[in-house]
Image (tube, rainbow, N blue to C red; front, side, top):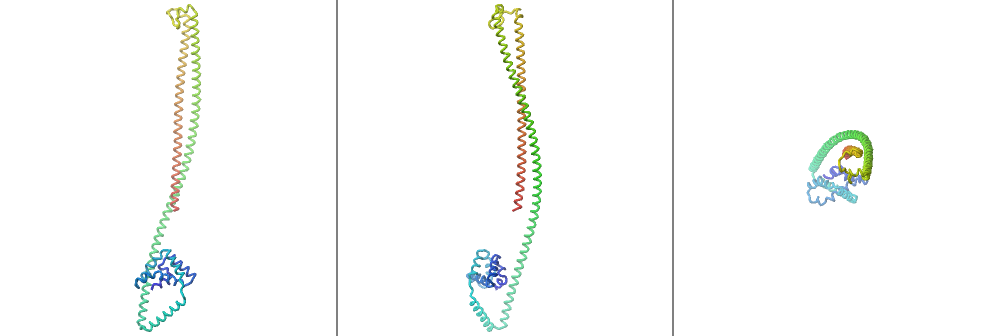
Length: 348
């Protein structure tokens, strides 16, 4: 009642597949006797549990609890080692067979044929009902497994469709990213060209302003030299005039030691008129030179302000170029990370 299912299905009805694979390998290597060795190994390993139960409990134990025990590969391996190590004597088997046939003949002689046939009929009916129940269970398991497999197949197809859509979207994003990268490269090239032109222009302006400043400095130095020379000449001329006045007795009466007039008279219009005119001319020249020097300094300040404005514009242009480079690099890097992340998910 329990071993028929083992022998008819080669233990595939209830036991896990890795255990069944070992049994089939041993069957192909050793022969049909391996099935009896495995059955005896199962009985030997569960002897204590079987002795504690009745007949119905033993049948339930063989049907439910025993297959669960061998879901572990370690337990299955131990069972196979026990089955291979068991030695069954053929003489004992023949002896048990003769004793069994003798016992059956004695029971047949003692029992009424009608009762024996009725008992055999009942046994066959019970076996038939049990096999039908097992068939129904196997059919239910088959249908359930088919439904589960169909659900898994539908889920797999849905996942495949979703992955295909994601793949298409990723390809489109990759194409867009490449277009964006190409556009940014073109913009970067244009910005580089524009910055190069601005730098060349700024350099030319700086060179021009530097030359102008150099000219202004040279003019200022020349004017300063001329002013110093003129002042030295004027001092020398005044010293000569003072010396002549001191040497002349007539002029000494009209001038004091400091060179100032003692008495206002008409004689002033004589020799002093030339000196006053020279002084006035020198003062006018000095005033013009000072005015020219002030204008030169003003132009120099304006040139320096213009140079500072150009340097400020140059710094802004360089900052814009760096900002555009950073923005392009960040966008490219983020797009590459996004693409590689999506591809990694697809690979997983």
